[in-house]
Length: 348
Length: 260
Image (cartoon, rainbow over all chains, first blue to last red; front, side):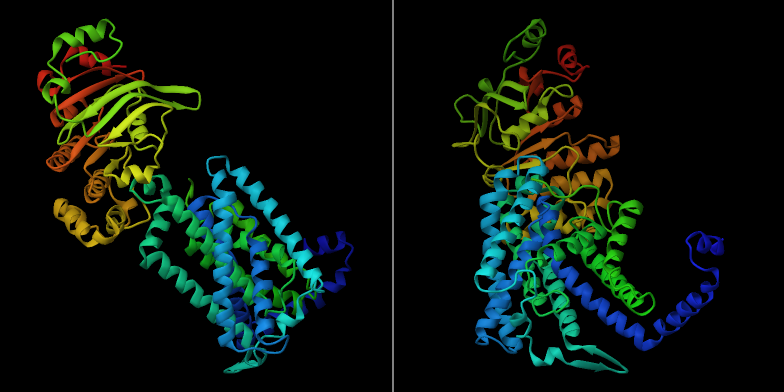
């Protein structure tokens, strides 16, 4: 049967043996402990970024039922804003310190959260009583406006909008540009930092949701916001806070991405982050934070595994990105509500 | 029982079978809640066509009627979950129409909705906690579990895993801990086994001993047993009202309003 297929595809039947041999070699190499460990660490780093990018999106959808198509653009603005603050803080270029990075993160979170609150109150709130398509169209329009504004501003300052902002990349501390030895495995300092930062972010969001009264209201509102209102809680104010929080987290994720050469601060970062964020949120189950974390881990680990395979065994580096969309397609067919999804979430 | 609005032949019959309405029993005292000529629509559908009723402090008032005559819509209109287009709803000195739902609830009106509407993914304890004012969560927990000891065993279980009867108890507990002066209770016996209905009735009677209650209920014997007064709603209008002591659940006129 395989021979028949190879013949049909025009491939010489005789070449089947070397391909099998090559895949056999790759399998042996893949299952070596050092390779597995490196793929695992890379996967965790990707997962940390995916979860951070998607966390705000899922919080907003879970509570308010708003699919925020502008989420990627807000992440991109966070990358430029964080990058700009870091570049200014170090006086135009060169590495900064982790302490300044954390100051930058706090400032970006505050500014983006304030911008998010303004967007919710002025643009999103008037549409709550209309069908969801209005919010989708509005946030989609918003992404076009924000991307174009970013393009204009970036060009004004003499930067190439579609290229990564090298000065922002260059502010990465020397510590994070080096490799760190973990036993026999050598991994990049940035990957470890991304894992740690993502872990702390997840813990902080989890603590907010489970240990605070506001978090309790958010979880209850995600199930039945009308009932929350009828308990005497101003659910619209909670909507504003959560929208601000979601946008703030997107900004923080963007600041971290400005240091990662795989992403970098550029205008196309808006769509580059929006698509995986939607994949993670849909695979996890729309609106569930736990689902987003688990889906982020799955997508991150599958992504790093497939990246290794496409780079080392198949030599086709453009395909790994496709695999995360394959995960999306499989999820939508097998379990349309996602891993932890409820039949219905959000609403106003 | 007296006809209230637009009496037809059945209203006239009902008028002659019972005693007085609240106007006789409580003349002189201001009602805690007063609906006057309330009109509510769902889109173009005119659901409440001028409902007027009042509830006085300390009373249990039943709102009875067939399915789809506007009982739940009356409660939703009071809470401003569905905004009436005309009329007046006064609670103490406050006009409720035009206010936001959380303001109405914050003024002291609690809601125990149809089908309970638990937060299924939250634990029992969390369902109680969210219903209480922020600075009274510990007191609320104590009150809820003292009133409903069975719930304490399930404090850390997700509310969605409880049985229908346990969920109804939790819904009542949620209304109880909110520090409300008026509770709007919607079909508490719906979908429950008869032996569970008895416990739910007992719980409502317990709550009603120090809270005013407006009770929507299709189970006529239960409604008459719990309530001091009743209103009959038909086609979006109050067609009769009276004192529950003056009627029985076998009352033909009353049963006529409730039969399909």
